[in-house]
Amino acid sequence: MNATHWYAVRVQSRFANVASASLRGKGYEEFLPLYRSQRKWSDRVKQVEVPLFPGYLFCRFDPEGSTLPILSTPGVISIVGVGRYPFPIADHEIEAIRTVVRSGLVAQPWAYLGVGSRVYVDGGPLAGLEGIVTNADKVCRLVVSVELLQRSVAVEIDREWARPATSRMRPVGVAVPDRVLRPTG
Image (cartoon, rainbow, N blue to C red; front, side, top):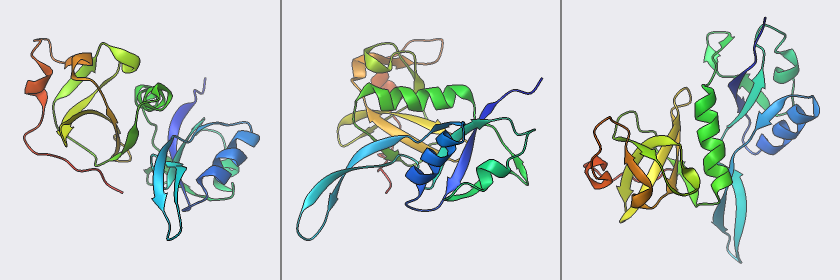
């Protein structure tokens, strides 16, 4: 029995929406997480929706079947994997990103954090998520990551919502890393 999993699909710059719509039209379950960003032109400032993971979208499929329909989709460059074999992304990582996007909280791309203090969110709209807590500009942020892409998303949270993910409960303030991390992009 073949099972479908989530995979990262690399897309051409500015073609993420086209690729996402095309994959959906072909019957694939796809996920293109977006966030609102303020863009400044010489004559105006505008709020636009841009991908949380620039150059990537996520698609659920069975790699044992043909990947040609995915690879022949306009805007698709490749499927992220090891060699020529697609490498799956854990369902819980995709669900964490979906929860952040659905929460309505301010989210933004963030530098990938391989190590740090893991926390469990037990309050607010992100209840049930685990991630890494950081403190930048006196704002507490929860960082959730897609390890395969080495990309992360940061979302502002209330300190009271989170507790350490370890068995021993400590104040969340103790879990904040020593260095201040700045957002990318």
